Amino acid sequence: MNKKIIMLLIVVVSILSVALFTNQVGAASDDAGKIAVVSIPKIMAQSKYAATMQEQIVEQKDASMAELEKLRTQMEAVRADMDTRKAGSAEHSKLRRELIEKRAVAEVQKEYLQEELMLQNKQSMEQLYAKILEAVREIAQAKGIELVLDSDEVQLPSPSVNELTMMIQTHKVLHYAPSLDITDEVIKLVDSK
Image (tube, rainbow, N blue to C red; front, side, top):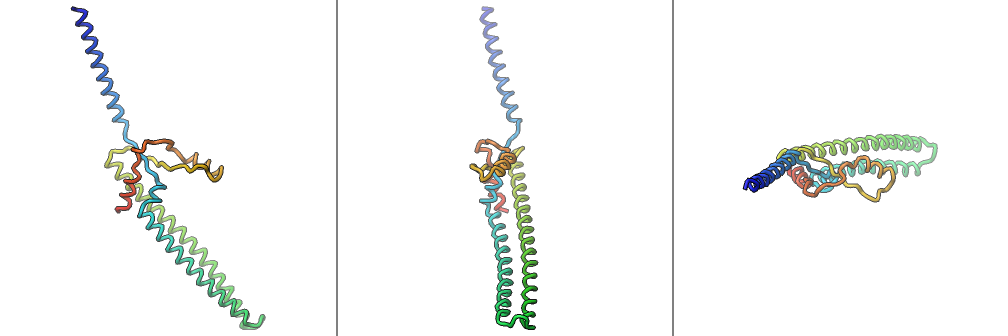
């Protein structure tokens, strides 16, 4: 009888030890922290906010191109007028000077407009990225997520060895469970503000 009690005690202690170990492992995994992933390219491609910003840039570019086209038309008119004048005459020289001045103005205007477009594009991208970071931070805090990674997708085959090398060097998330992806939530939050 004594042996039966000892065996029963060993079984009970074993069961309690397994239960305690299982609880400790579960608690340790709960304390490991939550991780999520976000696809920045997907946000830029699918966000209404990003599309609106892109439309503004395209409108600015179109307006700039219209200004340059107006200058080109003016230069063509001066050139056509020059063709009706006798080469070397005062009127021809005056028109030639006007054409050279318009060409110089067009070059300066083109350079200025290109710089303005690049600056506007940079500012828009910074503004969009700041909104993305703000939305990610807000969602992460609400869900208790401690780490959010960018899950950019690699496009294979790559157009060139250099681009492939760059993708390999910058692509850090190799695999993740789809349940970790909060990209759609970020898009909704970015678009709602």
